[in-house]
Image (cartoon, rainbow, N blue to C red; front, side, top):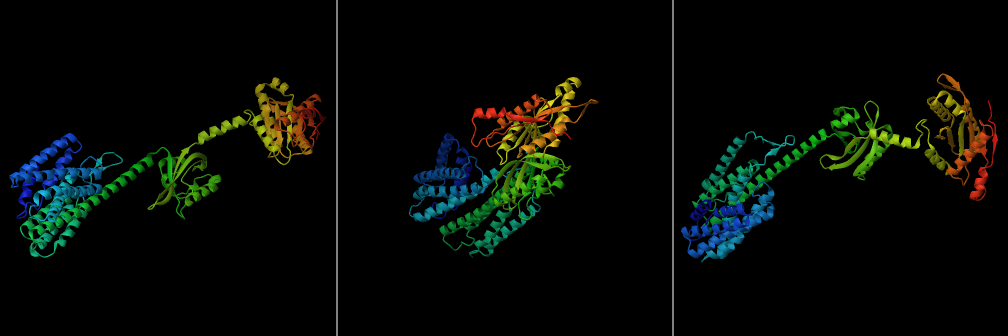
Length: 608
């Protein structure tokens, strides 16, 4: 029915003496008809056949000769098929709608391209004695204008307006109406009527068609897309009607030229109005998408369980906290409002300030992109908190360069790791270094420029005390011995418990004489009385000393000191023995090294 009405309307606007009509709305109706069935090929073939039959029959009924009606029917089918193909090819989407600049381009390309294709068939049918070029030009302009304006109106009406989706609720939110929109539409209608009166009435036959363009621009800038399409259709109808009636700026021109220029005027005004309306709608959609994106980010930012804050990198403002979420406030113990007034230097531990300044400098130079590390921070109550930190640079022309910092509280994990490490290298009872850590420290000392000394102590009388007062008191005695040894040595020395009642001390860069004096102080500290469960007890120690040389390893030096300690035991206990240094000028053999370890000398400690 719609196609039949469109053909009838078009045939009534034929230019005198020709088969060409001033407008041809059937081109738009045919395009929309096949556009509906385009994805379904079988249905498309059926509709294309029906379109041919109907177009040919209606042209025959309205006065076209038999062969001419068939040619015009074929031209209508070509117009519709090519328009659908171009429209979908440019848009690259199956849904028929018009709400973006890409859709506008697709409609324009489809309208002109299909009109050019159908003009080849239509011109062959309708030329007769007329000029073929002029006929083809009229055909292209007529079909392009009709398809663009009428199909544009229908597609924009079907597209409607995209609902605004709230990021918080996920549901469509009502779009507020502009204040004064009805009044502005009334003023625009009055301006359009006045322009039409000047162009087609008062100034008829004068070249004043340009006066209609400001109104078209105004409509495109201010009206919604659907309303702008209706406005274009209305002005096009009035323009065509008045031109047919002999009014307007083209009244003195030949009828074919009138038709051509009137259609170009209508096409220009419609394209300008629709282009501006779609561009403004695209801006609105993009702005709304940006607002929704920002709102979604804000919701995720505020509700994230991970502490997040952003830091400025701008000159003169580097390190200032720009944003912070509640999780960051909870981590640092500050309200969010107070946190955003601080700098990162107020948050990191004092020991981390230098590293933080260097990190910010790297990002400002562009050397950093994404960085992951572990840092110590300081809470509002002065306590330390360890965090696994992920830092990413965000560069924006509007907001400048800033850092996005994510923090995960790893204080408990860090403490657990440190405790595991401490247990791996320390004695669980006394807290002293164990044999593993002692060996590591001894190897490091042996690699130094001056040889280290090693003190090996085995407590004398510990078993008797342990049996007399109990194992718990014995453990307490070991703890007290460890404390005394630690207080007696130098800050760089390492005191270790090797197991049971055996202790050792690594003294880096210490000669034999100095080592002997240090051992005498240690032995004196051990021999002082102890208070255990209201009982005063005394113990002693057998001490063995060894000084490193250029060849000995840590294990060998421990064996030397251990052998010297046993000589103290055999010599009467509570005394010091020194392993004799027999270092050769060349590396000794294994048998010579073993023999040297069996030699030594013992002496009683110096008593105060």
